[in-house]
Image (cartoon, rainbow, N blue to C red; front, side):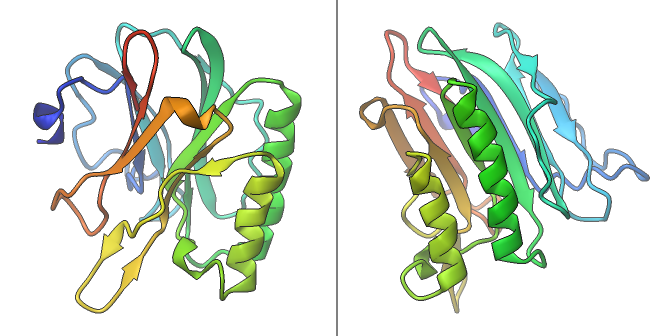
Length: 208
C-alpha cells in the first residue's frame, strides 16, 4: 500500500478512471480511513474521477467551474493551501476525444479560473502524451495553452511504461509558485500507470 510507505500522509488523493458508472454504481470500496471521498461518475464503463480529502480539512465543491470537455469527467474543489484558497481539479480525458477540441474547452476553464484570482492546480489521466509536444502540433498547442495562463507542467518523465512504449499521459499543472513544489513519480506496480505525487512546501509539509 502506497500510504504506508509515505512519511507524511497525503492531504488529498486524486484518482482518474475510477470506473464508477452512473448505472452500475461503485465496483470497489471507496472507504479509506481518515478521508472523505468525492467523485464524478462516468457515463460508460471506463472513466470517472474521484478525490479523497483528509477528514481534518475543510473544502468546498466548485460546481461553477465550466467543464465542457465533451466525453470527459472532472471534479473541482476549493481548499486552503499555504494559507491561501486554491482550486483543485481532477480530470479524466477519454482517449477518443479530439485533442484540439479538448484544448479549446480547457482554455475556457483556465480563463475562468484565472479570472477568479485564485491559484489553481489541475491533475489527472489526460491521455495526451507530453513527450510528443515537439513533434505533434495538437500536443504542442495543449502545452502552449497551459503556458499562456502561466501554468507549469510538473511531471516531465514517462508515467506509463510498457515493453514497447513510454508515454507521459498523467499530468499535474498549476500556477502555484514553482519554488514551493516538489513533484515525484512513484515506482509502484499498482496498475499500468505510475502514481504521481506532489509536495507543497509550507510551514508544515503539504502533500497531494
